[in-house]
Length: 513
Image (cartoon, rainbow, N blue to C red; front, side, top):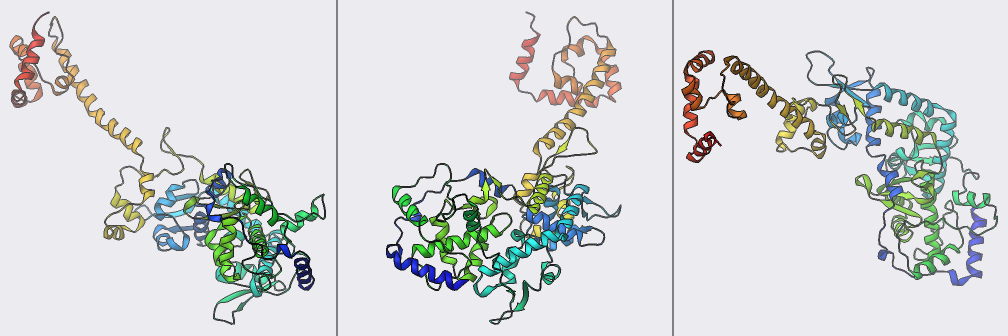
């Protein structure tokens, strides 16, 4: 298969020498980056999904289907948790539930909610289905047929495990089921284990863009890459002219090793590299992956620098999103209005997880309070030291100076705390006011006008000098009710500390109008 394509390509270059080593006519670094809201949303909506699935799988490995928070803290980095495990768990109360295994236990355990277990059951059924396994085997075969010497180290396969849709224990549960397609062997250059291709499949060695061209009603048309720029992208005439000539260059299959006879500085080589990267991204289920994964695989293929150049020169084919704290490479024609064009059962299940993560949870012990996604369910009376003890990281945080993560600041609900503080502050004041008001009402002083309308004086049980002179008997009863003369005397001493200006102001109110 390779030999005919090789002679066809060389014959094409001989008859059209003006295409050979066509230099670029534009500077790729002059492009002004423009954000694509739809593709950014497709990347951002899966934020924290992968660490959530990792933690879910770790919990379900236990026979009790629960784990103590201390064990999760020990594996925080391998689980790729973005912040402290206890905060991550309580960040998504619709997925995880923390509980105390014993009444006197202090360290909580984590288990899944019934809704999360329901989605996991469908996920397990999908992984075990023969149709899904066959599709997954085809994706691995296509990737191995593109790879150099048709081998890929397992360390690189692990980087693409999430994007390929491989199960967590794929090396033991999946690969042995297809011995006629691939196998795990030791690399001759070292001790690293690699996944090696066993049998070439001509039917699978056809790129997505070639299939699309064959299915097109205009059969026989030159193969062109679908190009779509972000709204607001500015391209000059030189770039449009270069892109038009670049699209008319001969298409070389990504399953053909053209690096041996194409100059790295030619546009023909650039077109072939774009085809390789385009096909790799289409092999992946979500049609996207982290930029670091692309560069690591490009290093194994010997195309690392050319992959970087292709991402810069072709913003209409590839899009690089900077959301969720990393760079993500997205193939544009894999999406339409921010949604995947190709439906897949794995992506449907991941969408269910995302929906569950954003579900609002109501507290059972309160009728009015709610916990939204991103809010902490930790009781307000729990202090910071208790939080550290719950996570088993109190000593470590103390050594670091007691610094808190951004997630802890987001979990604090200031409005709820202020409401509770205001409620507790007002409650004793109303009790004192009501009790003192009732006692004063029983005196029946028969005054023509009420006492001074001062809330502080009513709450503290103070009386003006005019009232004491006019009703000495009633005041003595009041003193006995309050438990002696000391309170009144102390209140008089406190009143004597007022400035003269305040006394003049109070005396001015006694003057009749």
